[in-house]
Length: 186
Image (tube, one colour):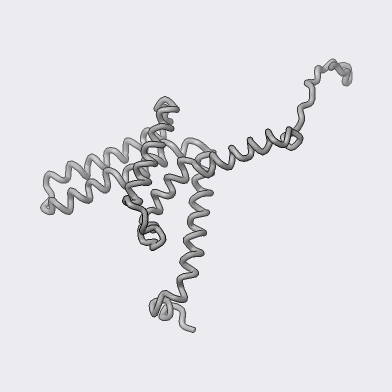
């Protein structure tokens, strides 16, 4: 379609229907996929790993036959590796330097095992730093921070879990005993 405006001939593209006017079925499928991909995302698994210590103490989850921290750690590592593989292991310069600093720190921790007097305790803590502490740092630097959608999703999931834990803790205050009564006298 051609239209003349102030002496200039312009070609107008045919107008497309807005998202809300698409077939109801297509719109619902797209909306469902958006919600499902946000719900079952790397960020959710990662936040579950970060909050795993809190879940271990929950009596409702005593039926889980494996260590929850190990479960979500393994899941988040596998999914994170898959994301990096899908990206072709391309990372930004800033992310690379952050990851390099974290790896250098872990290397220093492991080298310091050579002269430490407390071998058993030091080995256990070094293993924790090399796995449970290094992985969250690398995941944030290499996977979450470079992508604005992932960063937004991470903060939303983190906020939702934090609100949920605050609500549960608030419900438990009346039955907590004398500790809270001393803090907030009636």
